[in-house]
Amino acid sequence: MRRIVFGKLLIAFLAVGATGFAVQAALHSFWVTIAASLAISIVLAFMGASSVGVRLDDIIQFADRIAQGDLSARINHANKDELDRVAVSLNHTAERLREEFAIVERGRRELETLLNSMQDAVIAISQHGRVQWVNQRMNRILNQHPRIGGGVAETIRDPDFLAAVREAAETCTVQVVRSTTIVPGRFHQVTAAPLPGGGVMAVLRDLTKTERTEKMRRDFIANVSHELRTPLTSIQGYTETLLDSLPEADGSREFLEIIRKNASRMSRLTEDLLTLARVESGEHHFDREAVSPAELLADAMQSFEPMARATGIALEVKNEVERPVKADPEAIHQIFANLIDNAMKYGATGGKVVVGARPVGDFAEFYVQDFGGGIGFEHLPRLFERFYRVDKARSRESGGTGLGLAIAKHIVLAHRGTIRAESELNHGSSFIFTLPYAEGENAR
Ligand code: ADP
View (cartoon, protein in one colour):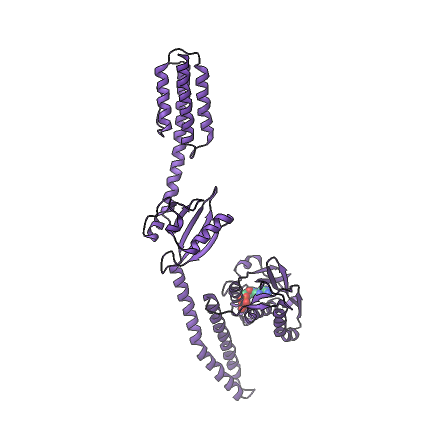
């Protein structure tokens, strides 16, 4: 009898253990431990017990049902003996398992609802490159229900998407790429993020409408600027002619000077708008070549030395980079022109402007530093936005268009570099941009 009891209890113990494994995906192993401990205590407590076959059968049936995922199973108990205490404990364990499982299940359903209500398409990919889950938006954009467990490359063939997923998995970093072939005629931004424990979650955002609107905005600005060029040239021309023909003492000269000044400001603005529209749209072609930083710096200095002399500002150059960079010299000249012009306009009180280059990691870092009034910390993140000015009146008065830094930013980005500003009030500002090296060549 003892052997039978022992055998049945052992089965119960194994069943409870198996139950623990069945729910282990959702629950802590703590509960499995509790279940196992209880089973062992049954074995020890009832080694010497007499016939308890029926009640033990109850326990075994209970364990079977739990193992099959029926967490509502319970053991009847009416006596107040040791076997009942075991039954109460097992019932309690089962109840806790049910509660915990319900919490996990509710969380899963909430997450699924959230992902299904998203405007972005989401796909979860296992570490072996298999589709694990997709949201409804993904089903819609693919026009099919991808096969769960099928290879991701069978579902989405876009090479940029697949490369981003691979890269995210291999490097455990978030990858952001632009894809044009997931759905023909539409642009998607793909963000592939590594999942804890392996695999990748990719989110696809449809940017078609945004890009179209952005293109319309750029085209409109470019067209308006272009159309304004001719009448402005004409206004400037006739004003000059009138000014040339009027005697110095003529009272209307003052008004003509105002017209000339404003026409030339509008002309600068239209030119800057056109430049920005071209650079932003990627339509502007940059002739990138291997060029030595010394050459780029010398070129910038040469243009500004006369202005520095005239305004009494010391213009210094510091070059610490020998390796050539890959850049379009004319475009870099425009960046330097905007930055040095600003340094001389807004940082003149410092009396000195330093233009230099230094090696930083895989890039050459160029900078224009002034020692003037500086810029408040709160303005730094917005400085490179078009038309953002710290002091509007001062910018206008000095003939600024509010576009110089935005143009500089887009030229740098087109060169695969970065640009930033560092500043301290009353101590001056530094505008710093990076350019990649031209591989395998040395400046001689
Ligand atoms: P702007 O034509 O007005 O100079 P920018 O885009 O070149 O336009 O510069 C944006 C604003 O950033 C300027 O209006 C000015 O307020 C601020 N700024 C730029 N460079 C400096 C500097 N070196 N020192 C202080 N403020 C600066």
